[in-house]
Image (cartoon, rainbow, N blue to C red; front, top):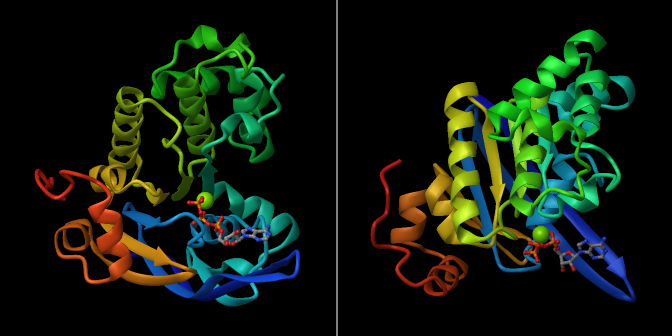
Length: 260
Ligand SMILES: Nc1ncnc2c1ncn2[C@@H]1O[C@H](COP(=O)(O)OP(=O)(O)OP(=O)(O)O)[C@@H](O)[C@H]1O
Ligand SMILES: [Mg+2]
């Protein structure tokens, strides 16, 4: 089932007398429960796509269908309600949270706002979320600033799954983590997908990360989507110069390609 269909999405920016076409007629689809890896050099437009999808910035033109609705036409209370179904995990989680917030309040917010659990039931729900992402229940009283980068990313994932989304957009969500911690977080994400059928739009400049989690990979270059295929196709037989350049930059990427 097609969960998400992006068609001819474009966006330009003008700043300091410079005009940048950040997105140039990008089209892609994502099925329920699928991971699409979105890769491209710095400045190729990946975050712009993610931000338009999350309705953080508008598009110049193009359409987005999500769960059979005209996603860009939603506004007000209806958009707030539907947002539960599309969540995001950023690289800079500290920047996204109030640094003085406690872990409990970070997880309480989505439960309250989206009416997932009544007030009396929320502590239990928060404990279950923490448990699911591998953190002890005692973490509820800690401030978000006190926990490690990997733990913070687990909390961001807990917050993202709290509203039972069908899609999570991850923008460089593991890029700042040490390799060993990164592997554990990727394992958690794959488990959650198998358990709950969540689709991921997994934005990363790192093809080794995308190889580990993606069913399909799409390649961006200067605002355009230049190639897409199964993870294996794109990594083993890349067609575009952009994909070839990204692959050449990662030694030993092609050997040991897992079956997906
Ligand atoms: N708010 C903005 N104002 C002006 N230009 C912007 C703005 N946001 C993005 N751009 C420009 O749009 C282009 C695409 O940027 P974007 O952040 O989407 O790239 P990216 O693929 O996410 O890069 P990175 O891998 O470095 O995160 C870049 O040229 C960037 O400078
Ligand atoms: Mg980016």
